[in-house]
Image (tube, rainbow, N blue to C red; front, side, top):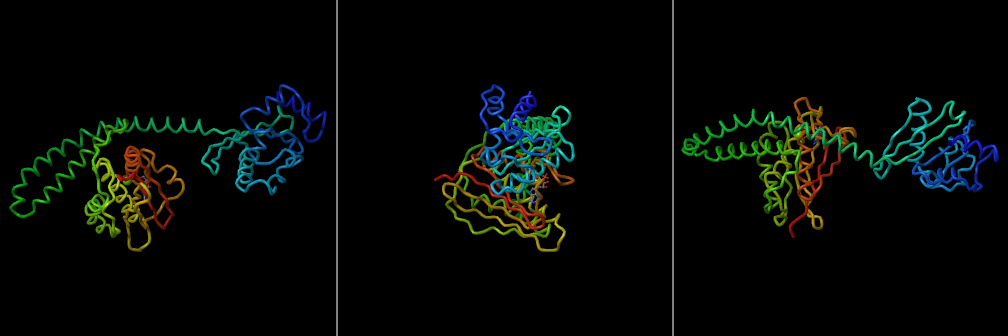
Length: 367
Ligand SMILES: Nc1ncnc2c1ncn2[C@@H]1O[C@H](COP(=O)(O)OP(=O)(O)O)[C@@H](O)[C@H]1O
Ligand SMILES: [Mg+2]
């Protein structure tokens, strides 16, 4: 249908079509929700619809008679668009792939398709369509699938882990008076608190397919960070890294579930320690923890000079089961992300390979 219509146009004008023809086909092509570009057998652009020239931020006349090399050197077309044009040409015309997908500078997904060959009589028809909605559905379906799998896995390991934990808890309670006599009662307290946290994590895994309701309380940010740093300091030293806790304002208070918050900060410090031990150079490992007020929010900062991450890792960081470690679960950050979202906050991350990583947790403050 398109080629028939285009043939009609080309026979009549033989050059670029600028004249208005009142036909149904033209209206269809102009109003379709995809950008359309047709190159003739000489590689000259012979038709472009409204959607397409708006996408290119050009007017129709500036595109008149252009070839692909003209478009690639056109001063009015942005570098990003030229890059995508060249890539789609390479992928589809040179490598023969039927379509090419890319993400634009605003995070929208696009699909470019090519129709050529006999049916097009030597012409090349490119269509460009936004597919962000479709991608979102695809990603949600993928995540739901992973979460369903996570639920099953958690159910089977929970029994196995909970039983020995209950036994350990019982024996520690029995040992408590003896430890008390030795003046080491706080050891028992720490072990019990850690067992309880492990139990809570298992519970969290079990319920991770459903959003869990946080046990809301007031949490002073400085106390939270001090406690987690204290808990991880010795483990960090053993792994050859130092944790620096920056001076904190004492008046920053958030509302939420303290155990869940501890879990998030702990996950991040553990990841930082692991990233440092996986780094090849001999530089001393350094983890910095800090928090600052920013308007009505607090920004909790956890940065390390570990191995850093490449773009592929950064892309999949929060997906359940995504891990680059041999013995990793890939659950730490996906659970952390959900906890922070449940508390009305968000996590952002920046990283450079071989230089380090910085996580920033933003959370609303209680005024
Ligand atoms: N601070 C960090 N530095 C480098 N890579 C990190 C850091 N934090 C997370 N990652 C990457 O993200 C992945 C997912 O982390 P996580 O969800 O905690 O799962 P796990 O630690 O079990 O692998 C890790 O395997 C690692 O590749
Ligand atoms: Mg982890």
